[in-house]
Amino acid sequence: MKFIVAVAFLAVALAAPQGDKKPIEIVSSNSEMNADGSYSFDFESADGTKVSESGSQKQVGPKPEDIGTVSKGSYSFTTPDGVVLTVNWVADENGFQATGDHLPTPPPMPDHVVKMLADLKAAGVL
Image (cartoon, rainbow, N blue to C red; front, top):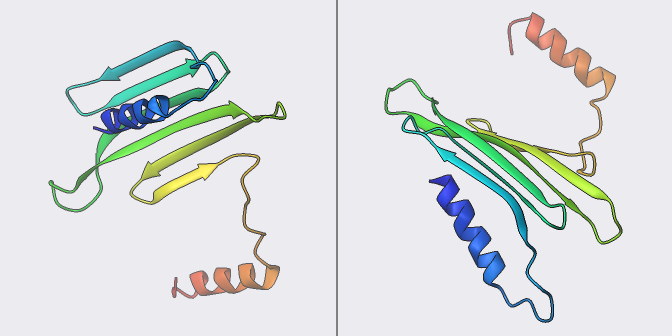
């Protein structure tokens, strides 16, 4: 299902007016959908853009019907100034989590907060 949505978004993006720009060629494309609900796909375009994703079904709750899709993937592209940016991501029962050297990250917790959390955990409060 996610593959179909991703392809639909890609088709809409490619169908958008390009002005004088020529379409960017897709140099490789692979996809696999399995009977157990697992899937994977990847593609690379002539401008160096790369996308890959894989996923599977996972029980995310206590009931047998509490099944969801867990996915992971990455994409990379080159900025107009020639820098290649890569984003790795996971989407599971904990939500969407993306990482990349160019993405902002929260500052480290102050030492007194780390100590307080450790004390609370040791006391059985956390």
